[in-house]
Length: 167
Image (cartoon, rainbow, N blue to C red):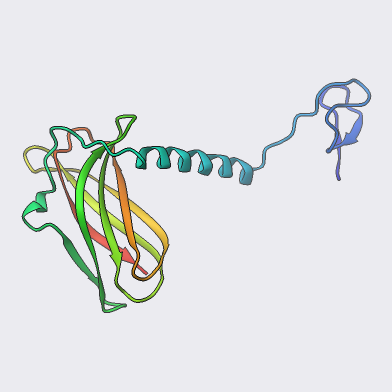
């Protein structure tokens, strides 16, 4: 318990008090930086779950540039094993958010602390107009991660996995 000054009358009161016993004004609680970050994280998590639970395809969008090669394989030399992105496609969520989705299987035989998939975005002329990414922590061995990366560039017509980072 700490003693603070009432913002209205200036008398000393407990920081646990709901109101000042002298003047009756409600004591406003200060929100810590940690609490604010927690609320923001919770909000982003809820939006992410809502968007990821929608399964409507994005009409009129082309498949991946790499559609002739349905998966992209990249090797991280520190594990001598590969992670592969597959089942890549565009998806438009309930609120109109365009995403690029796919799956990555952890074939390294060990839990990965962090995995990130980087995706390059292209317009109708195959010019790169941006990039996006998705990441996950603590990917267990043998587990498939269904990634979903948001796309804010509405001119996006095709996309390609540019890299997979893991450790």
